[in-house]
Image (cartoon, rainbow, N blue to C red; front, side, top):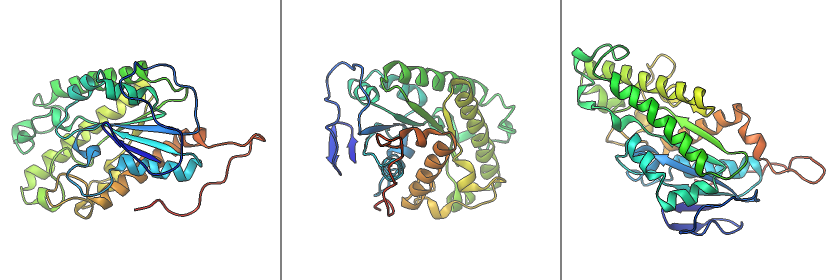
Length: 280
């Protein structure tokens, strides 16, 4: 597997060379090495965690499940909003990565909101509050344009795009609980509205929606995600990235995406999945 962060690449396994930076994207024929690209904010970027991002872990899992090598390009950045990701689609490096992408994983939107207002009772309930209405509308439009931009640039015939929600758009676990009941209730309600918006966009544009809420919080929201968070209560630790990667891959499997990437022999029989677990 090949992992690339920006322009730097580390070869982790055998496979054809990745795309050459600086060239205008051109049609890319199917190849034995497939490519996953990560876009979004600090959650997929994972710069605050001394661990592999879930984007990289998804590549490792797909190595195992498809019997093919996956190149990973993580173009997510701390603090980015939906507008930042949309603007980055014009970057030569990101365009080069997207041109070869078989899977693009997008998690963005939390930084679009004024999170200082989540405990403001004047903004309750989030579902009908004017505090967030314009931003939720902008999030819908921005994600829709991002998906359209990805499809315009990508050249792989079986491209899949996954749009991820959040377990919380701000602080959670014990750190969030220390900020009081209004903060817990307000942040949870806003997160549910953001996730509902992301899911609606995914359904409309034909992307795969990845529910990041239920694995971390449970269906009712009562589950404490502290064990999967860094001490800041805001970002995933290694355990959290593993759980997120497992969730992404599971939702891709349910959507039928993983099966289309499995290597087949000339007789049409799928190559057996490589044994063992992904490296830590």
